[in-house]
Length: 414
Image 1: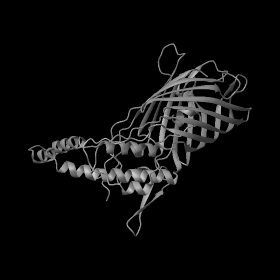
Image 2 (image 1 turned 90 degrees about the vertical axis):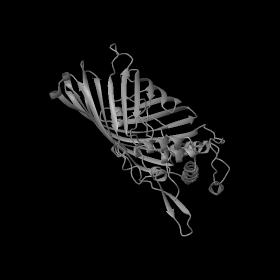
Image 3 (image 1 turned 60 degrees about the vertical axis):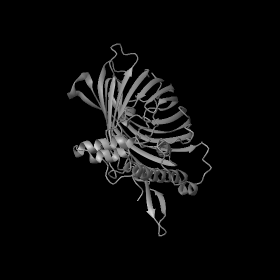
């Protein structure tokens, strides 16, 4: 397999609107970029085993081969999640995390995981490869691939649910205090009494209110993002993809390429030391607003062990020989992956066994990832790919993510 460079730009254009005048701008843009199933079907991904942490509204990928002399990208891909392209209504931080809050007779709340909350976020992807190479065929032909995927089940453990709920409650209380402090400030009164248009007032109020955001609020939102991104106790993703290629670069000569259906199961263990303070103690703390107050941040070191398993059926009609032309084969893949994450660095190993009409083979692959920042990832892979010819995996990739600012997911606690 050629050395491949993947440049991924992830752009989220969704604005989340919640309780009016009870919100403060915040960025929820922690990224862990994954490849679309359409890219994986074409064999252009460093790993055949990945699940996205959270689906984004819009993702683009540019795939380039180091050996291409013209320097132009060899493949392109886009992925859309329609439910994230428009403002989400009746949404808050808990619903976003897939947690239902149930009010009990004593006016306290019980929090339960809605394991099907991600199922509606079906994503669609399209990939295009300029020079698709087929074994024993001299020509290189364009190929296109389409795919769908969604998360059927996402089960969070109780400790993670409680952490998300407590963080949400702390932030909601802080928002109320910040709002109260702001409404008593000279800046607020000056803007309200100014002779400007309503739209200008709204814009100035938003900017002025952001100056009242405390370090405590910033710290808590970072905690929330960390709890939100924690690997669930169990997650089940399903995907399907279809590819076609065009002989002699002519549209009329399109041929059936591959058709695949697969499910990926994932789980993880958090290896970080837990904060000794209990959830009840956190609930009893009533935050006080001090402008730009200093608070002690939690450790930003991530330590976790992730596990993945995949089962896939793939129909492949890209097998060619001079005597018989193209023939169709049925492939059944089963395998797993283990990944150790330590802060910005992760190392993993995957093994996938393939049972085919032609022969049995396997993929054995080591993967290394390094997070330069929340939006820049470097990844590399080395190992053996399926088959007995041209089966070397030698991959170096750079993933870049861009995410627009969203309004906060947190609103005043009612």
